[in-house]
Length: 377
Length: 253
Image (cartoon, rainbow over all chains, first blue to last red; front, side, top):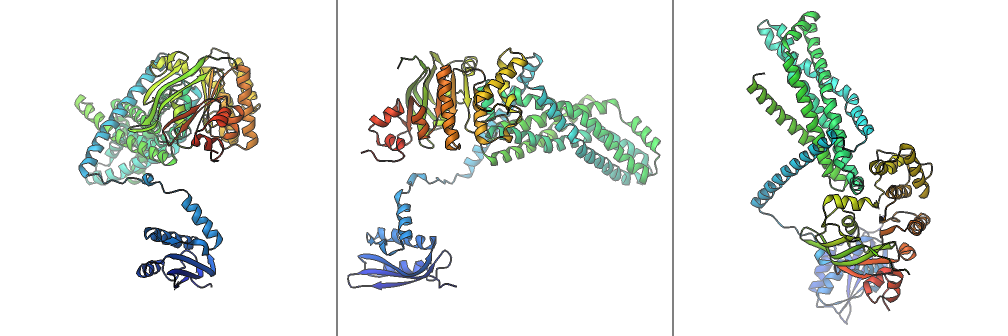
């Protein structure tokens, strides 16, 4: 174990101060704190020269440099001559290097404290801007869709098929699990209440209508928001970082048609199918509870479900599925397209895509429910 | 040298973000068949200048003319038509990562030509051969090295036989031999097809080897301080900043 760094102040007649450095001058291991030396130096009558003696110095690193640098700053304010020639050769060179390019005074970040009201105001303006951008994006997507119907939109069919596979077939396991469990939970919760009235058989109605009309679409929508919406945002965001979207633009290929349209179509086509599948899985989940716990017969449960669920319920569920598909794909693509040019921006885009999609799903569910209520279906 | 007509003319050009002015009063001309170097220190706005020239970003002020057409003063259709005659190679290649190299090169051909699939395949093979990537058509961008990605980016930029090729730092991140091969390729393409080349770079070796016209953006003065043949600029310029740039930091004597 080497001795910690110590410093001895020697004054000579011609008011030269020599700092004798001993021991190890490494970061974190410096014994006599540099603060003491600054204070002791200031208490002395103004020295004409400050010298170093490092003959007893065993080892050093940035710790010594930091000390010397601060000392130099102190000395310069006192207009004294700072003589670094007594320092080790390497330390002298590093000090000279650090002083070679003067600090850029205006390079510092300006940190101003914004008043609360200004923050609120800015955020509100920002909110309106983002609503405007959202509407612009929806408009552009609609135009691209119109161009598709006119046969003018340019995108690769294979891209769309690949997206359909990844957001359709590959999503089946998670959709199965979630909707089966949701059906099961609904049946459980319903059974406890219905048992009080001896009306266990209505568990089939409860599960059937809730799943087919609403829950299957919402649960699938939320699963797809996390799974596919986030993936869309990350894909397009990475393409933005990689300048791939710039490359499309300079080729005169509209990213809206080439990237957004196939994704939107794929999800809008796959979501209703996934919803249908989720309906079946949800009813199956309810059936498991009904048959095993409530002693309802398999056929009886089936008949009860078929009698309870109307075609309208199925229609509303499938329609919601299509709407959610469009919402999830659009929010994913929008956040991806407006992504910044860094890795963290891609992460933010994915997060924001999921949040936007979930909020959109809930809001549109409310709107659809209110409209259905008004129409009496 | 034969007098060549101007291809791109930049007039009283200002660029910046919001209130911040990055460069002002840019005036220079790129002639047909030039290998034009946009040079300057880091952060001087070289790449921003290129995004404006290639139509991705509007300038804060001033005009750009392609031949005689006012680029930013025209509608999007005219801009599209002009920029379709240009190819752009991005710094990292910017190949579309979900497509193979061959698909990358063929996409512009499929979009803008009426060629048959067999003809397109021939063109794609030729362009990949020209950049030394024959046989790599079925590879995805992630499966090849950075230098190869850049070359594939050039093949894609050349797909439609453009009149102008833009390069964003073509030799950055390449080993010296590959960088030299890329320079030779740029020279050959210019000589054989008369393509105008606009290159953003600060690789001195490339600048002197291939550049025959240039503009120097001085970040401290926020404007251009010189334009012309870089070799002549080195010999004749008395501007200390430019001299330091062209000599890796030697002081003007």
